[in-house]
Structure formats: C-alpha cells, structure tokens
Image 1 (cartoon, rainbow, N blue to C red):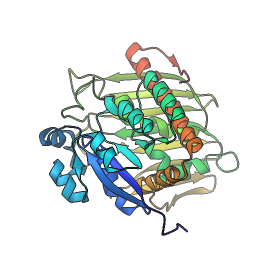
Image 2 (cartoon, rainbow, N blue to C red):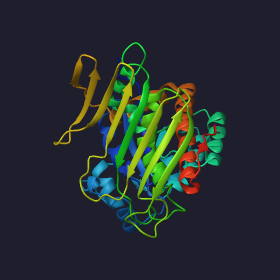
Image 3 (cartoon, rainbow, N blue to C red):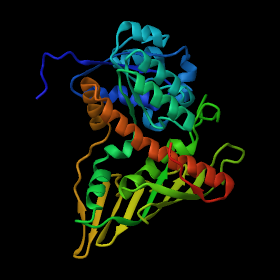
Length: 354
C-alpha cells in the first residue's frame, strides 16, 4: 500500500499543441500519488493551440491557455524555464513532434523525468541523442507505446505462446485514422508523418504479438484521396520476423466516415485471436481454439495504467526499467524507418538496429 505521507509526484505539461497535453492532463486526475502543477505554452498563441487540437474527440476540452488553466486548475507559463523554476519532478511533452527531442534532453539535463508520447522519435539521430542524454541523467526517459498498455492486446500476447495457442504464424493489424490538419501537423518539417504517428499503433502491435525481431519490410503507399500532400493516406506494410512469422499492417488515413479499421488478428498452430470492436464500439477479444471460439471479457486498461506505471518508475528512479522500455520502442522505430524507406523506394528493406 502506498504511504500517505509521501509527497505527490509533481508533473508539468510542456507544450499545449498535442492531444496528449489534454488527454494526459485529464487522465492524471485518476492516478494516485501525482499532482499536475502547471503547463508551459512555449509562446504559442490561442489560435495556434486551437488549430493544433481541433479534433472531434477533444471537443470537450478548452482550446486556449486561459481555458486550460481553468479546466485543470494549474498555472500556464509562457516558457519551459518558468515551469521548471516553479518546481516539477516530471514532465509530459505536448510539443510539435520535431521539438520533442530538444525538450526531452533539456528536462533530462535538469534531472527531470520525461514522458515522451508517441512518436517518441522518428530519426536514428534523435534516438542516439536521447540515449546519450538518458545515460548522463539521474532522471528517466519513458516512451509512449499505447498498445502495450491495452488489456486486450496484453491478453492476446499472453495467449500467443507455445503452451497455449502457439507463436503467431500470420498476423494482420489495421488502423483507421485522420490526417491531422493544423498549424504544424500539415507541415512535414514539424510532424513525423503517418508512418510514425500511426505506426506506433499498427506496427508496434505486430511486434508485441510476434515476440520476435522484425527482419525485412516491404510496403506500398499512395495518396489516393489527399492529392499533393506529403506522405500517404493509404498504405500496406508487410513485415517478416526472425521467427518466420509474417505480419501486415493496413493504414486507412483517408477515410472520413466511421470505418472498422481498428483490428488485430493472429493465427497460430493451435488457435488464433481477433481483436476489434462490435457495432456499439465496444472492444472485443475473440479467441479461437480447436474446441470452438469465444469472446473473452477483458477489462479496460490503457492510459491510466500507463501513467500509474510511469509515475511509480519515476518515484523509484528505475533507470534500468526505463531503458528497457526505450529499447522496446527503438525496435519498433527501426521497423517504421524500414517501412518508410520501403514504400518510398519500392524495395524490400532490411531492418537495421538503432
């Protein structure tokens, strides 16, 4: 049981232009032993903030700095230095994606724990800089890997082992997602791109179930609806694993109507799984065995569990555990870098360790 006399972990939000700046701030109210103490707007005005988080599932949240301060009951500072001077133990980054490495390193240099939402990085150079900064710091660096905290995904991974259903032989994941417009999401010099924004869902799910390194990637991608944009709006990524398993990830980024693209399936020697949503939007895990199939009632997990784990990791200063999570994320990032090269060149690409 947690000691009641232990001071709460003081958490700040750096940047108000990512959905995580709102979703994490909201979720922290359900995590014991933490306290949101402030945020830094980093000089972005309300119009820029509103354009950056103008997404349907964020409609319940304010879109101005003053509204943010009122909604969450914390001061909003103009600079990250002012936030740090006010006193924080850990920060969540809600900046534009191209700035996250910079602010992560700045926090680590001050001995402040850092949570990096997905995509935590999207170049090999940034990974190297993050590793070096984490190695020198007394604080921890923790990457966001959303499906690793999904109870149905975890249950699926528990089942896909030799003593149960067997290792997966063939897998498919799919994600339906928006192409985010806005002050920075539309700018390829500031945003990571769809491979990384959505790949940390669809491709990371394959790696989670496979339990084996990715070896080769081939892919096709195109702009089929959004002509003249960088990146793609539809893509298929084909991954070959060291175990011999094969996986595909389907990206539906141009669909502007409800579509059941959030799916995951795997076939193994003695059974398989399908993870998706029913007509009412409830997540289901269907398990197939030789004796028949059934739906497992898996309780929700998700963001609260991830934040609670992260907060405990920060309190313990467990740099080894944080480093292990970072390396897990780097394995997925290496696969996504191969994915980008594969669709751009039309060639099969070997996955290179980062």
